[in-house]
Image (cartoon, rainbow, N blue to C red):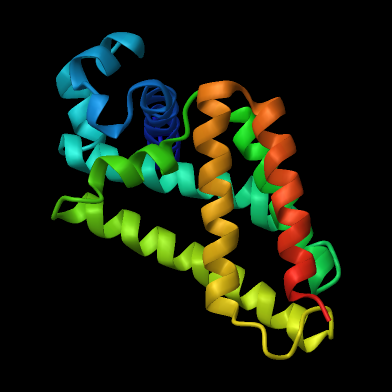
Length: 200
């Protein structure tokens, strides 16, 4: 076996483990990840899993990063095809609605916020960094909408990003409890009022 083949097989095995761990975390949260259960699920030994992830925390961090990458691929990247300004901002929110609908029974990113908001350590720091980075993406898109004349020049980008995020957290919460249809309808109405309140 060549070095390239070995590296490719190792990467494939790591991806298999990570995919299974992500599915587990959607149901049980990152704290619910069990190396033993994961090893059984991918037909490996515990030591085999540890060969790819040196610790449970390293696995949890990798799952958290994988969740963020999936979120960005579904929510932000498609929206970048839209014109800068309010069309792109609306597209981000529409894609976020679709993500929430798909993940109403379990979102690794939203559950991680609850799991680690009151803790110290690498997982807490990663959650904070991811959340701040996403808030920054929203603020940048809002600033572009202001520059395009779609939002009032006195728009507070930090405040609007906070309001968008807060509405989406409310949608995620209610979708999990009461179902997406009713929660989505209420959130859509709230967003229409939000856009009007900041538009020129």
